[in-house]
Length: 203
Image (cartoon, rainbow, N blue to C red; front, side, top):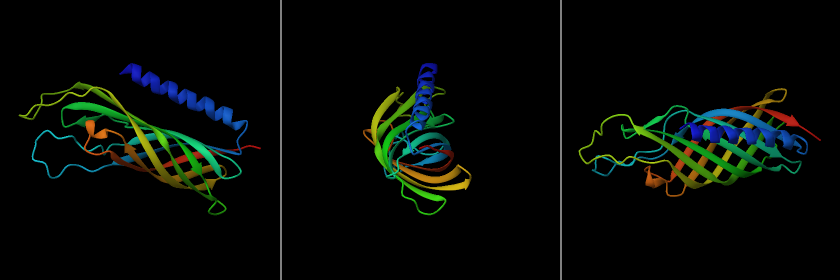
């Protein structure tokens, strides 16, 4: 478990380095942190007792870095992960990490308001931990190993500057996770939430 957490700490360090590097060249750089929840469908028709569960619920902290040029085009990188371990079918603890890289279009909607539309690709890594109890199903329980899947991402938000360079941003993100049904019920996952951040303006 520590190995994977160290890898994600390294990823955050790389993002911080990229943010500092981008400040030297970008017209606008937004650094934000936030939180949200995952929404996905579950199986309501099958009669089997041990089914792949929906990938939903829990609080997902997030961090994002966005660079926007004078043309209102730019790029974005973001990471979201489940804060508290979930329980997979009441049997095994797990924690998903979602990360993606996007092209961004950020039109001005008003003096203090900017829209953000983005699309890109990334991945989902799910850490599965040792089962913490006995299997409650007569048909048996499958113990899952850590998994990583490619994903496609589309998202959007509305950024409102509340004071000086500080902003709030309600947002929604749709993920199409390839082969996510190996562990969960659906390949389609929605993350909704909000972020707070700071805008760096440069020449």
